[in-house]
Image 1 (tube, rainbow, N blue to C red):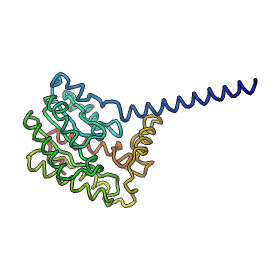
Image 2: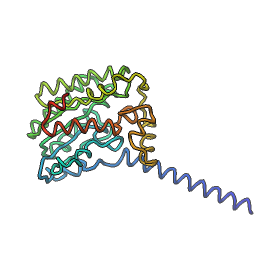
Image 3: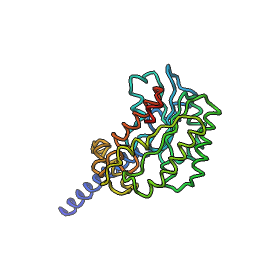
Image 4: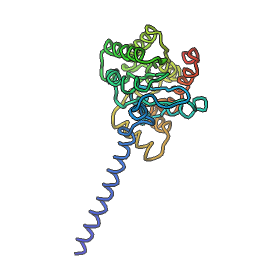
Length: 276
């Protein structure tokens, strides 16, 4: 009988531990991959243009815009005293490609009646092998739709490196997509924000960076360290041998600060500063 009670206690204890682990795993998954970003477009623009004393600014793209995995640079802008009267709408959606953004351009960008639109999308196109011509066509269609339906000033942001080894094969591939971004901006006579160039300047003399090695487990572990263990995104990056990216794709606090600075210059009307 004593052994029976002992075995029951062990089972109850193990069950409680299992539930705690599953609960923690579920919490990380929700905070990282499921929850909406702060002031998501689906909510902020459900009834049309949000009420704002200043400009309505929409940031659109994938996970680097959504900011639930890695640094949230859109929220950085929201917190700046200079932009306190602006309404910042986050139209980032984890996993999006340019085709995905094109499908929701009306509901998540045009519906907001924006004064400014910043677009950062394409990392998933590169990773998924979306043909370059398709990517270029999608970008043009997104820009054309926004210009046709709004009077917003538009900026295309170049894509940060994928991983911090600039000579990795995927970064050679990325260059063609960034050329497409710059060419699209030039052709459409809209603004171009050189995110990749700033990252490259920071990384170009660092030859000891690990090879590109992104995976879902890597991202999940990074999120676990941040949300459960309280590590900063910079600390997570450092533990992975990185500086500007936490998991070879998403932004550390240092990487996010670069994007914030460039976006601030653009919003302040200093496009020349953004391009430097």
